[in-house]
Length: 97
View 1: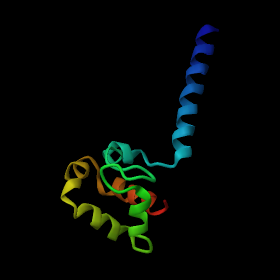
View 2: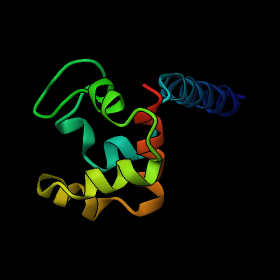
View 3: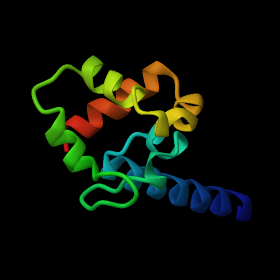
View 4: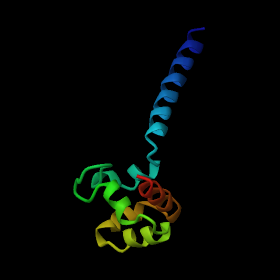
């Protein structure tokens, strides 16, 4: 009985963290790629905010935004951690900000 209660409690805690992560809407690849080391949602950190990047690429195709990101040498280490599918997800999210 104790095992069931502990397992249920752990499951609820895990579910709560997943819901909060989903609620933020940020793709997992955002942190995995290291994007949040230099960028924040609505204020400049090292690089521009995600909202500023979104404004820059407003009305453009995701592929154009990806090419712009890939063209910056400062993103070299982030690109090594991120495949094109994850980068596309990130840029789609950024463009919606």
